[in-house]
Length: 340
Image 1 (cartoon, helix red, strand yellow):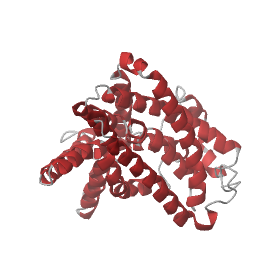
Image 2 (tube, one colour):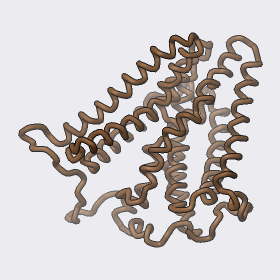
Image 3 (tube, helix red, strand yellow):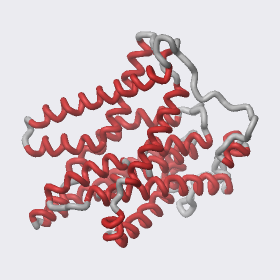
Image 4 (cartoon, one colour):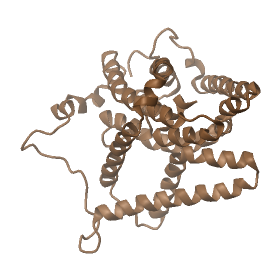
């Protein structure tokens, strides 16, 4: 359970739920969750670049999308001395009144505060449903980023309706996002207890290797058959999100779509709402194995396994409904089409 939490949801969620398992007598869940999250970021970074190179070699990417990769700046990661530097942010306010960076940070914090208040409200409401509701409310904090994304979209929509959206600068928000991701990755790695990580090194290694191989092959195999446009870009953001977080997926997407000219990023943000609804059974069942560990009643464990199998079956059914005739086109090949 900690593998998908650490890889697909990130360090905060893996730590929160792993730490919550202490009440079931599992002491090291938080550190193991952070370890999976850190390994996920590594796999996202190196695996994402590997996938891009593989996609280029096998003509999965449209030629015009490769123009950005041919730049020396992209290859080195640093702009040469005396080069024409791109604009990283625009001023939208008079500095004498309030700094433009400050007002962008304020709206980020407002979105965070609204998310916090919403989850607190959900916690109070679900408490009336008894222990099951309380347990669900606790686990909702583990996927708080989904609520934050949806509330962020709502805040932006309200600002658009009030015609005050111009005070926000997308470039500045991108810089804030990059800063936050760098801090998150560094903090996740720094929070790992090496003593505990080495204690479980064998199962962590086995699960990570098997899971990464499955992700690397299943995502391009299914994405190339489901999507009808921007196949590789959608594959890339999914790969990043399934090995790191949404921000990791966006970072990989920027390699080929630096200005988000395609609808891939916005489509994924809207899909977060569907993700929340689909994740509810998983959230309810995530403590089943831990409860089996505490009580010795293996029925809880089998119930957790049953939920996982149910997800696999439903995912395959939904995949076939979406891909239709392309569901098993060239099933022996990783990519459905030879060229994008």
